[in-house]
Image 1 (cartoon, rainbow, N blue to C red):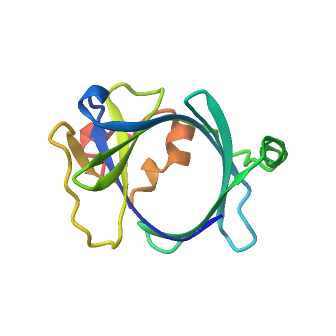
Image 2 (image 1 turned 30 degrees about the vertical axis):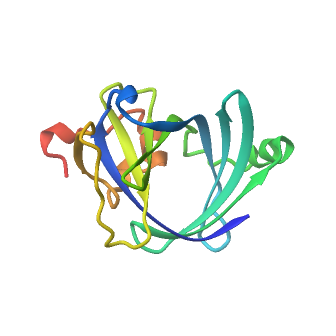
Length: 171
């Protein structure tokens, strides 16, 4: 069980040539949001397939700021996963994405690629502090930070089935 404080920033990026990144892991993820917890926490389950092996996780998060949250995450069985799917939110579609994990200058990045876009992706980085400097690979074209823009949350992207219209100066 992993419980603790998570500090994470998110960036909208142009989908890079995956071969230009030093990818260490690739996973296919289906993420389903559950009814909120009694303490107002966001709850979800994930089905993760990596190297032909499927695993399941349960996560509960309490958002403290747009980039800081308390997180409780642990592995669950396939049976428990199926049981929890019965608690899925009806107003949220499951999120389907491919996650590429790579290192750059001692930083661990996660690049999420969604089936609805070949042009854009979301880049995430967990930090030690909110003020930590981030150094991006030259092969990545960062459009802008979206950590505090709720429209770029996984839940909103899944429901919309598209990225917001960022080209027309939309926030």
